[in-house]
Amino acid sequence: MPGLIPYRFTATIWQHTPPGGWYFVSLPRDVSDEIRGMLQAEEEGWGRLKAIATIGSTQWNTAIWYDTKYKTYLLPVKAAVREKEKLVAGIEVKVMVKV
Image (tube, rainbow, N blue to C red; front, side):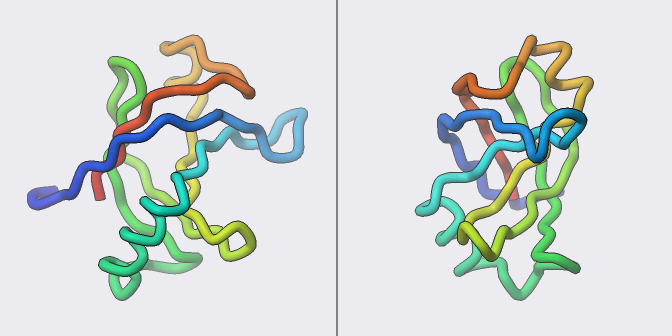
């Protein structure tokens, strides 16, 4: 995916409706505002944008979704990434998202 814009930030991992809920990182509001301002026209259903994410040494193809309630994009953190990077809800992580 050529021409992607990288965004780097620190955020806390959280779990939606535990137990068994998905894990996410909420992008900072200013980052989300910038992305939405430039790329909203490219969003697919539910405010989805394709992305490449990196946490620690793990990079994966994914998507971010716009959360209308909190006015920010959400990055899902899949189990394989959490296991490899030893991530749990409540910890802060350094994230890079390219969109």
